[in-house]
Length: 452
Image (cartoon, rainbow, N blue to C red; front, top):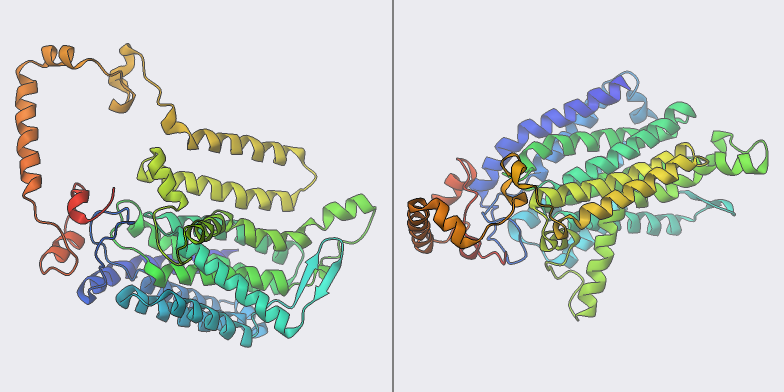
């Protein structure tokens, strides 16, 4: 565990320290596209954060290769090298897309090629434990198609959810934390060395996300771009493939005792079928809804819009930070709920706890519809949005000349805003002041081209 934690910390530190220089490089390289109608941010923000995340991945693998216990992962398996090869290819495609806006079909082809590179080097699904059937061996073509499909779905699910500051990195970090605990339990408790690569991948993925999040939280100073979102999606899929199709359930020696005990004990065998889906349940649901929504309108499934789940949360009335935290909550509930069920599937308390937390999540979703008002004696102790609104006439009478003075100041501010020049990415002097110096958070959305 100490070596896994050391690898995680080194990966996070390298990613964090490189993100600042990468941000300045992105500004110089002009990787700051103009704000589109579907974007939520209101200032041109540099991309290419995936560069720092990729070097964090390389640093984590390099450190793990020189540790006494984790070195066996590299000597006994070719999966780390397969991951690095596929990650380098998908990262390169993402960097080109962040700079030159590659066509969606070309990116899809690149994703399939990156998955194929990993399959050629041995990172593929060999068999599947099917409930009620047992262990089913897959042919080479079946394993290849299933592996490529899982990689492509995971990459695009993470890419689609990358729409708010800190959303994709935080959700993937939560998913990788749950996956790390599951893989470590399989490796340590059952003594199965084949689970070690997946455990290492999850630890490195957590480090990549944790190192990038401080730069990406709202208001974000840099975006990971497709170079980052596709990269972490591929690493997440690689861990799921490694532990789903590489571990033999018979090695756990669970098939003993009564039939009822055997059913409960074999839950860890079947959880690998579900856990890769639960850790991306929210992004995958967003992906499916987006495809259905766009095809129903007669659009291409790759046509961008403002109908994603995080956009809906903003339309309901949630703030940017609250919408991100709600998505975090549901991701953690699904991922850690599946993890808890794999540990003790016979406990009714786990089911009741998940149901109770789901009810709390529904209340949080509807919170903007029910804004409580504090009593008059407690109005000074709560934020302004929870205070009772008084009539305009009484407020004007109490304020007196201060109201007139405030109105004059507001009119001057509105006049200054109308004469403010719009900010456009690529203008000399604007990008440097916006992205390097103190960032203004009050830019008018109409001037920036945002629909919000």
